Length: 70
Image 1 (spheres, rainbow, N blue to C red):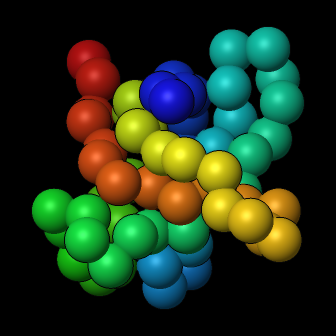
Image 2: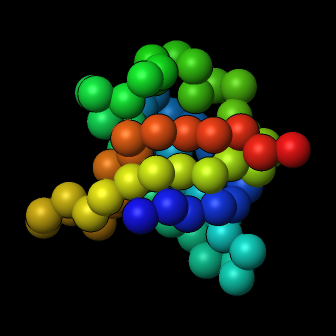
């Protein structure tokens, strides 16, 4: 599943995204994602497309890829 929105905040391997409908989403970076948790620090305020999947028993999605959009 993909979600597009603006990254509001980042902390370690977690991030909060605001989508076009004004809904907030919480995500965790997958260990298999092609970027490191410290690379997330450059994303607040940026519009991104997150590829993610649901995680059983978690309220957060698991991010497998991030694409920064123009």
